[in-house]
Amino acid sequence: IERTFSIIKPDAVRRNLIGNILAVFEKNGLRPVALKKIKMTRAQAEGFYAVHKERPFYGELVESMMSGPVVVQVLEGENAILKNREVMGATNPANAAEGTIRKLYAVSVGENSVHGSDAPETAKEEIKFFFTDDEIVG
Ligand code: GTP
Ligand code: MG
Image (cartoon, rainbow, N blue to C red; front, side, top):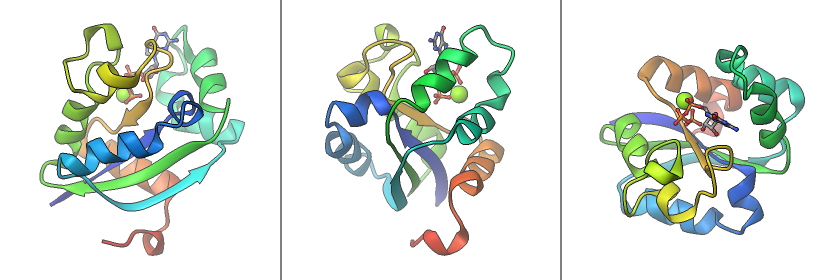
């Protein structure tokens, strides 16, 4: 069993899609073992996306993650990291497969409704960025 980190982004929270998105996770064997609704500070948004600091869209990305509340979660399941990437669909919703969260709900590459960790090391780091051990209840 594996754990990954997920964010329901402000564009999706704003459109009342928290429940729909959690339903897709649960239907696909990804169980939330920790979750909370937060409003990211600038320090959190900048720190979380520090890997993209040199990219032209970094400023826009940080602003959009701070634009409203998000739901941060730890998802647990078989091959959770890869499974979550599949369930999310391609970064650009125009390329996302049928049935994926981004195909169903995303508006654009900038407003693509969800984030998911891309590898075991990043999953571990991202979980630690937002959760303490005692907040995770398997
Ligand atoms: P995450 O799960 O959010 O990490 O998405 P990803 O791994 O599919 O994409 P990537 O890590 O390459 O980019 C991180 C986030 O930056 C994406 O989810 C997008 O929201 C945003 N992003 C990527 N490319 C662009 C772009 O060209 N323009 C804008 N505005 N945002 C972008
Ligand atoms: Mg990424």
